[in-house]
Image 1 (cartoon, one colour):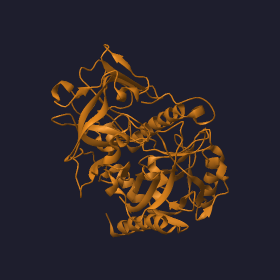
Image 2 (cartoon, helix red, strand yellow):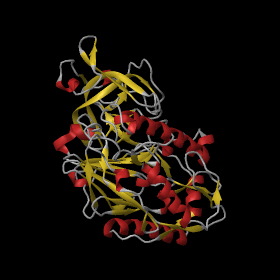
Image 3 (cartoon, one colour):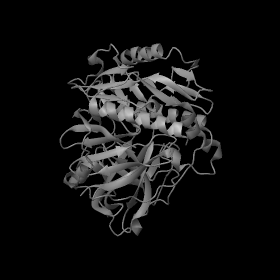
Image 4 (cartoon, helix red, strand yellow):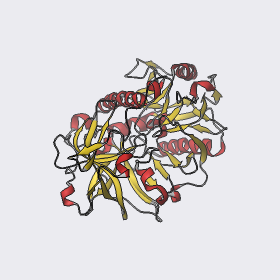
Length: 474
């Protein structure tokens, strides 16, 4: 990387950290076009190493699914446009799935159809593993069998594919065989754990059966069990997991799903007092040859973060809602009514933070003026045709860097989060086409997606009801 590129990157990270820490927000940033495009072309897949423990925290490596692409899949590996379009197709399905689980499909009707010491791990981006965007590697069973798991902040169950597998999708590791685990124990039908799973039943009149249907048509069905999970050197016993014998959908590559939602059956909910309901993650930016992190425990809560209250929606307890009051472009607040982002007493609307959604979605009444403000302040940049779900794109081929207005989230109570330029203007091909990385939601729900979260340390303090942004970057 050239000295100029390093300086631009340092400037972008400094702008983000300053905005989080002091609530100040400069009116422009520099987007390094060359560096961003080089990151898409010089893509290097790699495996995920074992977890690292730091000062008693359960610290896991976290990577985007693109990093797990097989070197043999050269048609996708070296084609950013193809990876991008596949990601957007998954993203549309993900958003549709979330909306089906919410009251009124995100508007005004119906019920959710889906339920069911500190430590951590590095987070891998899971973009081309089939489903889910970010992956961790943990041990399942005794002795532990290493498995890639999708992390999902909107899910309340932990499950893995199991032998005998009547119907399974392709995964990177051998399918877990409970017969080879000394710690595997089926949950009985009369257990209180079984009672906490919706759509549960009895398998052969003895063991608790679970079934989870996702809104995109994916599903997992099997038996509920208590099993030992290993996070680096940290061993956690008697975690309730689904042992899936019939599985289908967008989870190709991963062995299963690690639910981090707000419900009692998620990993966070089950750990309870062991971690104080606290976890933190840092999603590494696209094109950077590094891993992010997922850390559990109160020791993961940073000093100096900007804290925003979490809101609870009793009709969607899995989701992490935050109070958003407005949006800014170029240091100027866009005239949007706060009511657009409000979570009503009946559970409609609101703003959800989600690791599984890539692109931030906004109601049209917020997206349109927000987009228009950005277009007005980028009138000097050459436009390009719309691409996929994006209607605001630019032809930046031939540019080394460009000056772009800042984009900010105004949270209830005063905190302002100003995003790095690469979190809102992203490449969609290898030729220099960049798009404004927001989209209309088609409903009253807003979703803050993982592209906008990249490179920023995000911490959830469930016990005290707060989410923190910064102060660290990754």
